[in-house]
Amino acid sequence: ISGNGNRITKNVGIINNALKHQKGERNPSLLSSTDYSLETLLTTEFPENISISELAERIVRALGERNENVIIEIGEEKALELFEATRGIEASGGMLIADGTRRRTPGGVFMTLFKTDPDIQPLLKKKVCNLQKTATREIRIAKRRGEREAAKAFDITPEKVIYVGITKLSSRKK
Image 1 (cartoon, helix red, strand yellow):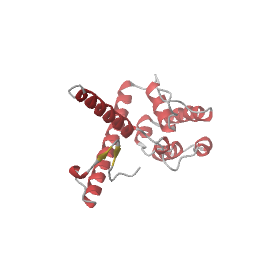
Image 2 (image 1 turned 135 degrees about the horizontal axis):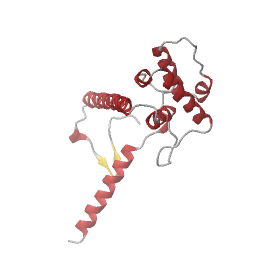
Image 3 (image 1 turned 180 degrees about the vertical axis):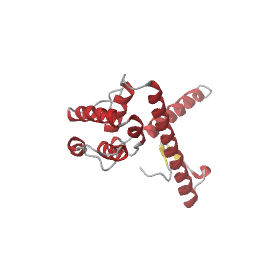
Image 4 (image 1 turned 30 degrees about the vertical axis):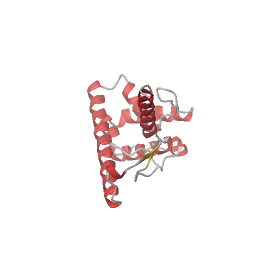
């Protein structure tokens, strides 16, 4: 009987780790905007005399992204250069993420090219990455608030959430 305690503790640890990994899984189709299409990306054209904000809006729409700040920060010339490189990569099949398990979104390809471009000043890269982190943090906080509000609406408190095996019952949409 005394030997079983360690095995049970170990199994609980394995189950908890499995839950953590499941929780972190992403649906690749949800990573880019629902408006994105490869055809739109490949056929997008830009007029000659266009404002930087209009250019940013069109590039973001073509990439299927939401945040225009990066394009505004890097400027028209570099944004167009990175967009054309992104378009070429997407036309030839895309770019895999570091571990090779899935393709990057077009916005992810754009950002990877941005981060690895030697012509862009490190200070600008740091500034843009901080903008991205701030935006991600704000989205995460907004999602948490939404979950709390949904939990209040359904009168779900942490004590009422029950784990059955490795299935977590919650008010989240999947």
